Image (cartoon, rainbow, N blue to C red):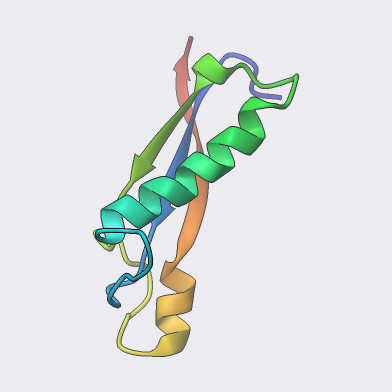
Length: 86
């Protein structure tokens, strides 16, 4: 449907501390966006050069991270279709 558009895969985290192998929220959100990139880039109808990833960390919260529910909602990956074409 968007064969000529640039597609951004944007990872987001909550402000809660990040554990495991990730250094910080930016590292985690980039890894999550990369996982979605890997999945989408294998689809024959999507060219890999259309895709780019961004790890925002906790910089663009939509909900308050003061509660566990808000933290879960801020932990997300968004697919953004840009008007720019290839």
